[in-house]
Length: 341
Picture 1: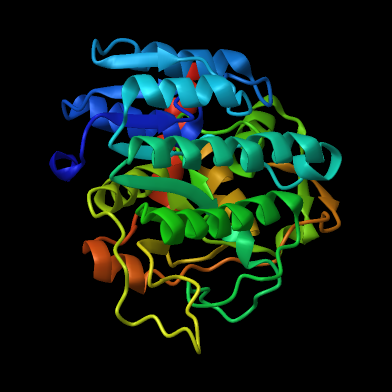
Picture 2: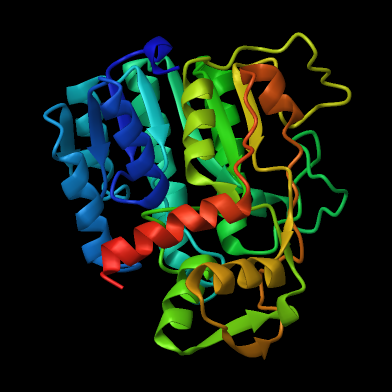
């Protein structure tokens, strides 16, 4: 699917979880990648450096350590590279972290995204694909969640900044005819994952014989989506720049399309799993029972996510389908190998 992606390609967040996997896939398929990342200490820097070390094994990978909030450096990189395709995955992630560190999100997710948009405009990039999140749906409760819903009531600052990205992107699509596509990821997991995510934390603590914190008694559903499925969807979409939709009705505007070259897609497994069932699967794969400590629902959390992926299938012919059991098995194998457990 990558042969149709216009080059040069800039991938941001290449020291991060999804950005690493996207860059690695492109490199394996012979596509040169320029990778931008500032390697923040939000979580274990050694894991980020290990991801980058893997990417640097490819001669066609170029690393640029730049802070998204450094406007001049970001715009200078765009002027140097003049990327045709930009896959923007760098961001300050984490719902709970946003409660205590709100300015991190303003700097990276708002000002940082502004620099990406402006860089694409100045270089007349052919397509900007950027990461949004299922968290934008917030209080929406009409499941499965689809892109034609409003997503107007986020319940965390993190989600609010990602919804703001979608609105900012639309303005640039409208003003400058810049093709932009936002991707709402649903609970991504897999090898090389983020240590702050539940499946990673639980694996570490179960193996160490430590308590895991289980919120809301484990009675929360998540649409766990395996990272390889996420990458496949990203690359298929990246090869299809957004175009104006003839179905857009300004009297009844659909938030996922526009008269501008703008689209928004869900990328999820369309198969929500109870958190308790995920814990049971991990216990079985690890051969150990978890020591649990129940906690109330945390601010910013939602009780369920469930992706409607019919638009993704219609546009790309692809739907994520890796079962949680299979995905967790691959993650556990990677975890044992990487951490020497």
